[in-house]
Length: 298
Ligand code: NAD
Image 1 (cartoon, rainbow, N blue to C red):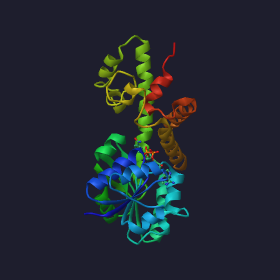
Image 2 (cartoon, rainbow, N blue to C red):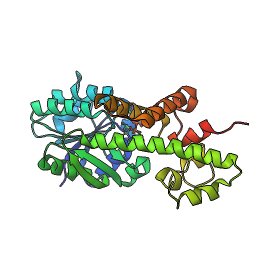
Image 3 (tube, helix red, strand yellow):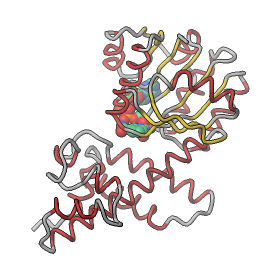
Image 4 (cartoon, rainbow, N blue to C red):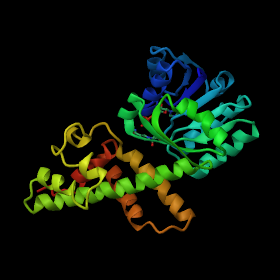
């Protein structure tokens, strides 16, 4: 099915996602506050729109990939926002990582305009965004709404799961990232201790990777420089998933934990550690720089 797909938020993730939509034959209408991001997409065959509401006037499906709660609210419900010009039955897909409660709030506003809203946050990072192999966790009111969004998500991802009602995609996403942050800090301090005990980091990582401490932060994204190739730790912690974005996601899980009276002692500590890292010059580095932050500086 070829569609007129609006795309708003052409950053690290959004660019690759929008290019995949174009390559699969969709007509893609773009908007971003950063003119250079828009120009890059026009060069790839996208059409430029002046404001979010202009995208809404011309698209039958719209994907948003934006930094945070406030910006998502502004793009949907602000003065020049999508919902001002939305046409009935338009399928709105938000792939940003935001608070599940904000997704539910926007879904209700979209429903009042007879549009369909689903939350569809992603896992996989910039490489998977460019390759069209993202994992999507989808919150949709009905199986029918999910199917309507999936037609578009198929062009950008591989593992696509309907998690439940609106907000449940975000719920899965913030749970995953809380666990990821905890495991990354755990691996960082473990590797540091082992090296201080005189162990070779590659040997330690290899044994941990086949022992009961095994996890993604050990065997796929090890935080110690030189242990693995093609990971941010072996490239001065450049690229990857920034500490500032991880800190934002930990804030979302802590908000949700407070709201639901869930005890998350390690999630809370991870949030504070990543906050201290942001305030110590690490905000733009990959989140695996928790190892560099913790290690003995001699
Ligand atoms: P980014 O900062 O690279 O891109 C965000 C884009 O939004 C930028 O191009 C920016 O100009 C644009 N933007 C900001 N305000 C806007 C507005 N008012 N109107 C229109 N455009 C606006 O961020 P990213 O890394 O692409 O991440 C986007 C979302 O995806 C975040 O919620 C992030 O947590 C999530 N995410 C990122 C990764 C990753 O590895 N980078 C992985 C999974 C999920």
